[in-house]
Amino acid sequence: MSTPIPLSAMAAPLMALRIFEDRYRHLPAPCVSISTIEPSLLRLAFHDDVDGFESWCQALGISLAKVQHSVQGEGGRTRVMKAETNYSGGPVRLVCFATIPAPEGERSRAEVAS
Image 1 (cartoon, helix red, strand yellow):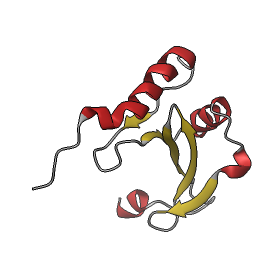
Image 2 (cartoon, rainbow, N blue to C red):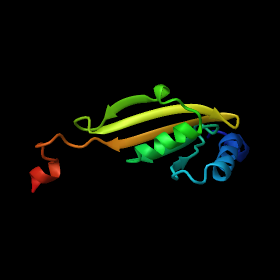
Image 3 (cartoon, rainbow, N blue to C red):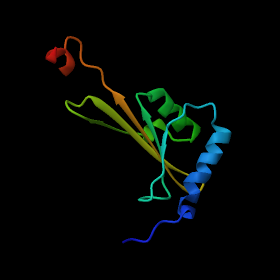
Image 4 (cartoon, rainbow, N blue to C red):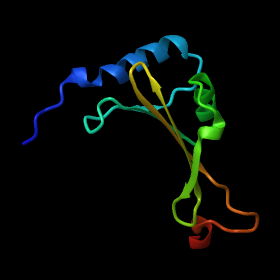
């Protein structure tokens, strides 16, 4: 059995959250995660909220030129954007997942099944 990670190992991301709540309370709330696997990492995820992702990038001083873009999912229907910066002594990773609309005239699997 491995040694448990102490809560103090998560000090940097927890401090960043405290600062964000004070400084950036006007921004859209992301899905927040901190894990014992990478206890110093704060992950902010945005689902179908590209504007929210871009607002956070701007607030944290991340140039949109530094954002990594990719596509995933069946048929490449999910746009993925990732960016990372350091804040309050630890890494902050922003991730955005956004649905890519079907091309005009193409039917979804739900429409085909019905």
